[in-house]
Image (cartoon, rainbow, N blue to C red; front, side):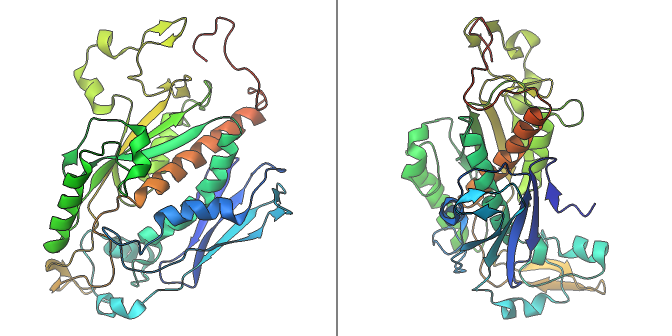
Length: 367
């Protein structure tokens, strides 16, 4: 296995490099008869495309998606859906000085060791630009989930050490950082500006909330829903950690505090984050991902060349100051892809009713 695909029934394969002619995705297993147009995908790509200013890279890419197959007269056919996004603003000359140097924090060294060859232009396949293909595929997965009333929303809860405990989800679309706390946004913006001035970059924490997910999704023991979600999110290059529910705080709790009591109305708390034994329990799925600072910084760094000689470099080119907010739709996409796959796996096994039917128990309690 080459590691470029994810999913069992709803299977996504991404292809392409940062400075290649194009990049895209092939989606196999999408149910037939679902309404789908390029505009449904484009609106999600517009959320992550570069060149929006502020913390973002000045690279100008329209990221216009083209549907090559799998859709006829505005509906999916059940055959593989091929998507392509042309690269139009690649400036490969910006990376000529990196041909024989390894950038600290990047995949240059490890790609060279694995393959014996690497595309030094913008990081090639290891570039964050690869995530455009994920977002395109995730837009299709989101439409499958929407038919079941499942929604996925991500927001910024920390940036450069500036954190919030507020969760006003109505505020997310009211600021460019997708932060659920308008009061903390100026401080986050200040941290970004300071990092930019000193030629540095910042990391942050993104929280993802899945609402409306029914109980019963997940395939124990090695395809637990939380395990697959963690893998999907960890496959994003910037992500260095994933928490589910109470996460690491659970290690500091007693069982009497951590256990989520069941009541006729549902679970009293949600420390488990919407999963039990690797299976969704009907509560909101709550995840948090830690995103590292972007590796390309405008400051001198120590490194070595391809012959092992010591060297120093300053990374040029066009780069973000922080993966936030562009990482937001990427996290949502990987969550949607994973959930859509498990939803279809459950249905294929005959253990899940068709859309629109009641999935609650006779007591009306936990689903």
